[in-house]
Length: 83
Image (cartoon, rainbow, N blue to C red; front, side, top):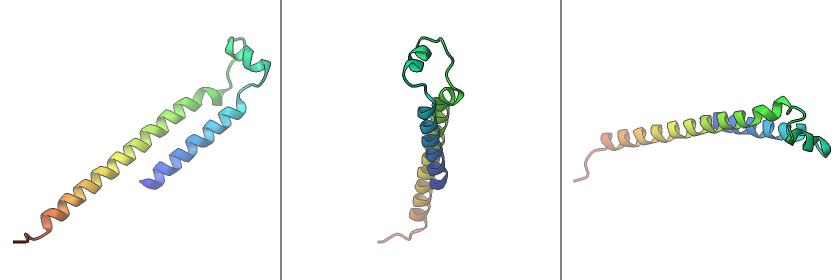
């Protein structure tokens, strides 16, 4: 699960970097802010990709914690009493 979380996080960083490179510079930024031109597609999809990656990483982390907790309870149940 850690590999999935790492891969998705790296993918999010790559998409964010590409979106930063694709944003207009100079006067192009002003015209985009005034909605005279359209945003590049990668700039539109970057927040969506980031949200999806955060959700996947959170789910993987919660699943990992749950499996650790269940394994710990099973180990405690199988351990003989020390009386």
